[in-house]
Picture 1 (tube, rainbow, N blue to C red):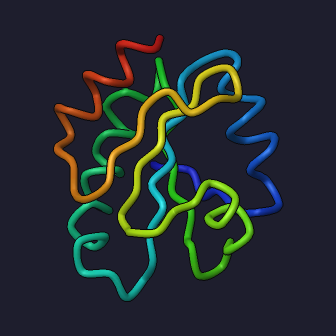
Picture 2: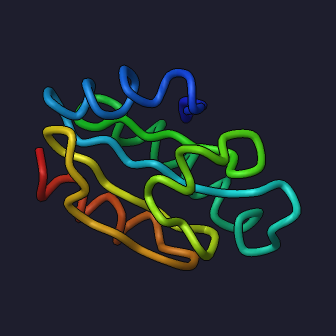
Length: 107
């Protein structure tokens, strides 16, 4: 199951955790149609790749500070973090296979 990231846990759950394995963050909103398509893909990816990467979601309505800090202007936006830094950025719905490939690249 995908983790839920927030303004409160982002530093520890994403930035610090990315020092040991890649972390994928799906920035989404409840009213966003494409986000509703991306959501189940993120859940499947988390179940399949959870041993080598952390996969989670951040609700941009509830965690506006973090979304603003990373200049998320369109959703879904997906960021992969490694060693506390963004190493990949995607805007729009992405396939599970594509995301898995990029995560494996940063293990």
